[in-house]
Image (tube, rainbow, N blue to C red; front, side):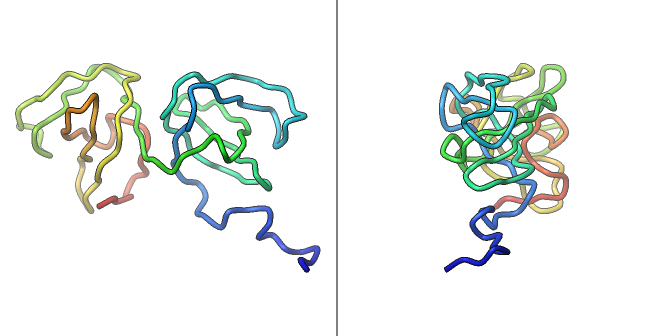
Amino acid sequence: MIGAGASAAETSGLPLPRFVSLRSDEVNLRTGPGARYPVDWIYTRRDLPVEVIAEFEAWRKIRDWQGAEGWVHQSMLSARRMVVVIGPQRHLRAEPDDKAPSLALVESNVMGRLLSCPRAKAYCKIDVNNIQGWLKRDEFWGVYAGEFIE
């Protein structure tokens, strides 16, 4: 039997905040943690990276790269790490170096899959449309400063 103070039923136990991505091409962003709350927005981009900032039972409060916040059901989220390019056009580089050859020019709002972010490096390796290369951490949204993924 679970007592009144049992918070395990209310949270996943995973760290907050954390990055995840949308599992579906249609995800309802609600004003509160439950199906009875109105839909504030409908996301239509599968794999869009979002940040989980709070949890309540099976619901997750998320924030997107533009700062919009709301609640989605946990079944609409995936642990798959994705990123979205921010700012002007960026060079996807062959190596984690400013002078490395450019493999592609990547437009703002383009999404990619996060592959690795080596410890103490300014660059992360991402896959954009099956082209693997390196972007600086400040050229995309979807990883924390100082976070490393190997």
